[in-house]
Every structure is written in C-alpha cells, then in structure tokens.
Image (tube, rainbow, N blue to C red; front, side, top):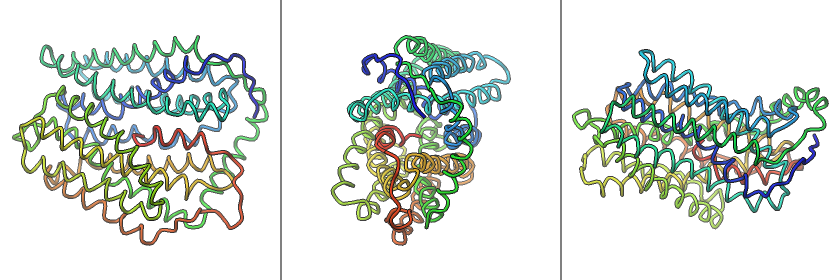
Length: 444
C-alpha cells in the first residue's frame, strides 16, 4: 500500500487532540459507565457482565483492521467515527431519562465501543502514514500523555463533577449532564479534526482490497503456527486474571454502602482518590516498571513484575476488612494498589513485544497479542460480578490475590525466546506499535 500526503500540518496541531479523542470514548465505556450504573442502582453482576461484553469490540478490532487499509482516506474514517462516537454518547445521555434506560444505554455504549475500536485503528494508521520514523518516536510521548489526559478528564474531573451534581439532583439527571459533556467534547474534536488532521490518500485501494483476505488469513495462520503459542496465549490471559476482576469490582466496592460491605464513598470522593491520585500513581509505576524490566531483563524481571502487579491488591482486602473512614488512608491504599498495577503491567506488554510478536508479521502479531490480552481482561471482568456477589467483598478480594498464583507458576515453564522458527527474520517495523503499546495498552 502507498499513501500520498495531501497536507503537512505541524504534528502538535493534531497529535495531542487525536489521542485525546482516542481515550475519551474508551474511558467512557470502560470506567465511567460502571460508576454511572452504580449510582443508578444497577446490581454489580449486571454492571460487570454487560460492560465486560462491550469490551469485546477492542478484542476483535484486529480482525477488521486490514479492511480499513482499503479506504481512500484515513482522515475521513477518523473524523466519521469521532462524530459517530460523540453522537452515540449524546444519545446515552438522552436514554438515561427513559424507563428502559439500561438496555438502551448498553446498546448505545456498544456502538460507542465499536466506533472507538475502529477509530483507534484508523488513528494509529494515520499517525504512522503521516509522520516519519523519527517523528513517530518524537511524538510518541504526546500520544501517551494525552491518552492518559482523557483518563484524568473522565475518571477524575467528570466523575468529581458527577459527584457534586448528584448532591443537587437525581443521579439520572447528573449523569445525563456528564454524558452530554462527553458527547459534545468528542463531536467538537471531530469537527476540529476536519480541519486539523493531515490528509493521506491511499493510491492502491483496489490491490489492497483484493489481497486483504489472503493477507489476513496468512497473518492468523502464521500466528497460531508459532511454536509454544498456546502456552503463551494461556499465559497472557491468566496474567490479567486478578487485574480484570479488581479493576471492575474495586470502584463498585468503593461506592457500595457500608452495611453492604463497601466503603460508602460518594462519587466525587471516588473521582479524587481513584481517578486522580490513583492515575498519577499508575503512571509513576509504569515508568519505573519499564526501567526495572530494562535493567533486569524480561525473564528475570517477570516474576517480580507479576508480584508487583498483584500483591498490592492486598490494599482492597485491607480496605474491605477494616472499612476505614479516613480519606487519607483510603487514598494512600488506592495509590499503592495503582502504583503496583502500573509497575507490573509493563511485563505483559514486553512479553508480547519480545516473545510473541517477532516474526514474519511482527506488527500484525503484536496487534493479535494485544487482542488476546484484552480477551483475558474482558473474560475476567465479565465474570467478576457474579463471583463477588457469591463471595462478598472480603472473600472476593482474597480470591483475587489467589488468582495470580497460576500465572506466577507458569513463569517457571515459559520459554522466553521468540516464538519464531530458527533463522526466520522480521520483515516489518514494530517501532510504532511498541510506542503505541507502551503508551496506551495498559487500560485496554
């Protein structure tokens, strides 16, 4: 495939806003929706199940990504799906005032998820097509910064605002305002990007469309022919067993009433403790975890990274056992948990990059590896609500700690050599995928 640059605006004019637009709908579906449903009285098992199922959009996006290569303009796809996502978020706001709000809002959030997953493919493709290798590396930091800025805005600022609004009006009205704001923000970014994004024109659409089926099939077959791939897939899925459960039920535990075993925090308190302090701790842990893995090497570092990611889950067991009321204690415990989460998650990204992805289709296999990674998260997220309801919060958080044992044992039997036949050479450049993965994939 070849592209022709139709315009060359300065990257600072569009890279930060492009990745802000990539993060906003993801966090709306993955984080904000759960807190909204909790405020509106939806049971934990329903929240976990349905928000988990919606996450399959990000699992399977790699399967339709090759078809987007045949589009004449990546800019057009990016703008269209930003507008579709923004309009759908606005419609979510409307449905919250209707009797069948749960079913309708879930359906619309599924549309948001599909639009967001498709947008991610086109946005990353536009980034790669519009910038040189040197520029891609130079602006990778801005990607991560503004993708995570979306998390600050969503789980921090907007959740805090929702908490204040809930004290003045019904929860449904408060969250209508929040989702209306999200919809307006994403639509505004879409309109801005009609002007700001560089134009790239695909000059080989016919050849791309004819060959896409063959190439996609070859990519998938080659992936599953890698020696030891099923062991690696099992490892990736189990790596997220504890994380997928605690990241789903943890915020719901913070909101649940004390007579039900929760901490009884208000929505704005969750936004401050988990969305602001927790996010800062997560980013700090991610940076230090990367340096730690680089210093020790993946094979030696991985058991420690798994422990670092899961042992801090003791923070939730402590909170569920003691039910402290002091917000400083609660915030410190949550920051500790999120720091460990960020520190340890680096190990999974590096495992996919260095062990699973190398080979004939390195970039495509990295995408498939991250799809498997998302599958692990979604699976454990989906079942976490039912497990928590049966066990109660204290026993559930103990169960989450035990969920880390299988993957820790597997590290003793994993091969850390590349899953490629001896002598096979890489034929695709994975620099852009690596930059994107380290910047964004932890929350996917």
